[in-house]
Length: 232
Image (cartoon, rainbow, N blue to C red; front, side, top):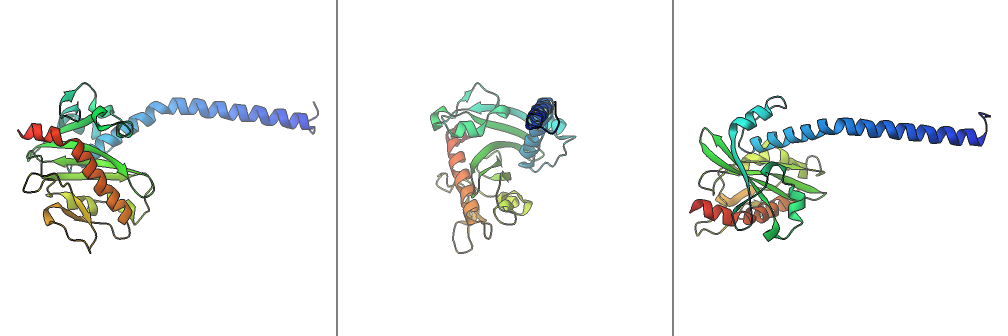
């Protein structure tokens, strides 16, 4: 075949496209288990970070196995139901009516007692935000929090995943004196709010801050009946 002909060029290009596509597909299939493992380890690190336990990719699984003493799934009535808490996909669950959702709970044993960890998922300015919040045994006081995002602006909304922002949540209360769930108010400097429920919003990241505030209120409300059952 004439290498300078259009037919040769077309056939050569087609073969190369098919060959490259096949190589990429094989590589993706081969790397998938490793990617899934890395995602699992990162999730375990984030769960532990919500109770102020820092880990590396190497020791996260061992520390998780030692510290997370129980995990289970509850429904909106606070009843334990069948399911694996670790593999519940919050994106899928949040698309369902509340009464149909599976709500994961993790229990961590720390030096200061048992902590209850609740996963969260919401919306920021540019995409989803998510995280974990850990409550003390009183199921009212926040022991720690860990947040992350998909595409918030660096230096602005992305600051939700920094220690300086997350540390504000420690010691805050999600119920008021009357027992009403008020969650946490992420307030700008011009806003007033009870100090026990208030953290400072991110300067220049108002929409992300308010999205995180709404995420906390919505998702903690989902667990309210479970919390009530545990308290009683």
